[in-house]
Image (cartoon, rainbow over all chains, first blue to last red; front, side, top):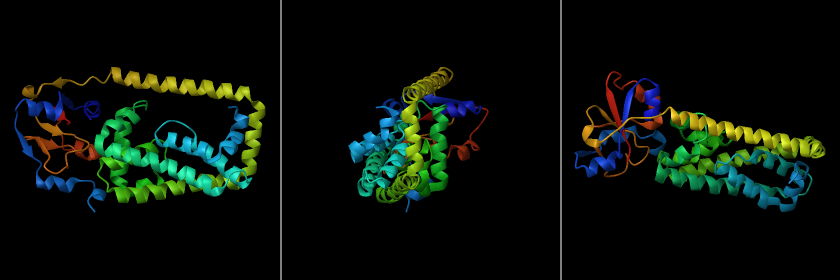
Length: 46
Length: 262
């Protein structure tokens, strides 16, 4: 994803270690908003 | 195995060899399952192989491979897709092109994916990573497999004389054709590996520690985001990898953006 975005001109960077590293660092998390669930690919929501 | 003995080997070892070839292709390796199916169709016409055995061998092999990759895709997200795309011209576009085709056309992709090089192996793990219900995947994938296997065996059956002449010619040319094909195959593999290596050298992406993030954050997980009780970095936004072209329009261009996976 980051490679593609950089090739398209975005200054994309990657958080080392991802969500796990963020969680271990004690930084804040939040629940996935309910309205984000509607963005699932449609054929998975039958 | 000489080229001229290809049909003899398939006739001798029958369904077992056909099963193995189809399974290996289903797992993503570049073996000519279509050629094997064509040959099987010709052998069925000649009475050297039964139609039932040929169909069962091809269908079961593809189904086993596809179901395995479906569950690997569901549990590993784009990790498996990255491996499958590793030696493509552009691994990132390989994934996104397949994902977009699947995302836009949905379940119907499974009906014809087997006929599309590249997409044939990508479709099952993509379906898994996109949380397609297994029963739905099984039904559609099986329909696509039956169509693919049936078409090639049918064509082989119908054009058995042409295939026999072709195999006979290749058998007489023998070693020369084998050598040419082998060298061509090696050259193709070397070219793919060189492309993969070249694209890696120029694709360095800056990585930052969590505490150093100072801009918009985007969650790009290929799976897990929609799981029950899932969490994300506070204040982050979802960037759906399966529909990146649509999402790109909403991204800020003039500032640093930060991406993360699991």
